[in-house]
Structures are given as C-alpha cells and as structure tokens.
Length: 241
Image (cartoon, rainbow, N blue to C red; front, side, top):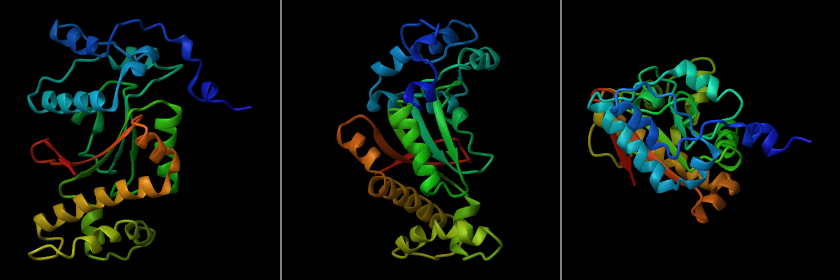
C-alpha cells in the first residue's frame, strides 16, 4: 500500500544535521559554497509567515546581487532520497520567471508548478495538495508576471490549436478586469498587469473553492496562500491582497 512515507522517501534517512535553514545564508556570508539541504526537523519548525519572510529576503538578495553561492551537484546528491520543501510556487512557463533564482532558494527548498498563465486546473490542484499535505510545504505562492504572453493571448482572444482551450482558463481574469479605466488591449501594459494580477487572485479563489484539503489546512494555519506579481524588468515582486 502506498503511504506518505513511501511517496516522500524514508524521512529518517537525511544525514544533514544543520540547525536551521539560515545555515545556508551564513555559509555564503562566510565565503563558503553552500551545500545545505532542508531537513525534516527544520521544516517542522517553520511557519507559513516565516517561510514567506524567507522568500521576501531571498528576493532582496536577488535584487541586490547577493545571491547565495551553492554547490547544486552536492545539493542534488543530498536530496536524492528525500526532500522537505518549505513552499510550493505556481508560476508561468515563461523562461524569464526562474522561481529558485527570483527567491534565492536552493535545491529541495521549493516545489514549482509551471504552466503558461499560471492558472489552476485539476492537475495543478493535485500537485499543490501533494506539495502541502504530503510533502509538508508551508506556503502556496501564486506568481504572475509582467509582459506575460498567455495573459496577452487571453486578452486578444487568440484561437490556435490547443492554445485556445488553455487560454480559456485565463478568460475569467479578463472578465474580472473590465472595470479597468483605460485602453483594454494587450498593447496597454497597465491593463495587461491588471489582468495578470486578477488572474493570480482568481487562481487563489479556485484553490480555496476546489481543494477542501488546502482550504482546511489554511483554516488551521498550517499553510498560507499568497499571490505575487513579478516584474521581469527589475526582478522585484509585488504582493497582492
């Protein structure tokens, strides 16, 4: 019978005994190359608010060009058997939105689901449930971004192969954005941003309405659902209500 332990790997196999996730940053500040990987003990001590702050701090390092130097090969080997993510991020397919870089996170720190337009469907809902309920992530972050091609395609009502059905998942955000004061076209960057932000809000609403598992976890304070808008032009993030 498949169990949570068998899905994740034997939880007691980790040999990494650093005391806190801040160990990785300390290593970098001391000029060392970090090989830190999150342990079960460290994950258990995290709260949703603490994880959110760590991602905010990571984005600050990213923008100040003080990113943590990591030995990814060694991190992969350490996390080969088991992993204990602190967060799961639903992001866009766009190559410019590199989640681990934007938040300066290492191997095993975050699960990332990517689809053009960062919308929610059954498959991604299941992925978010796996990341939070099974793997223990404390934060669910929905990440829209500047100059998103999928958002522009939904605004323009593009009809092309399977792209048509994909963009249908984003159309509710276009409908939500009709109160925008200004030109409602894909050529207006401000309107595209407004639709992208509403698309994030709609995804958050969908998670709460369609996943009783995550909704219960949120109600109990075990996980937090947060929306952000990422600016590809300067690497900054804006948190949405």
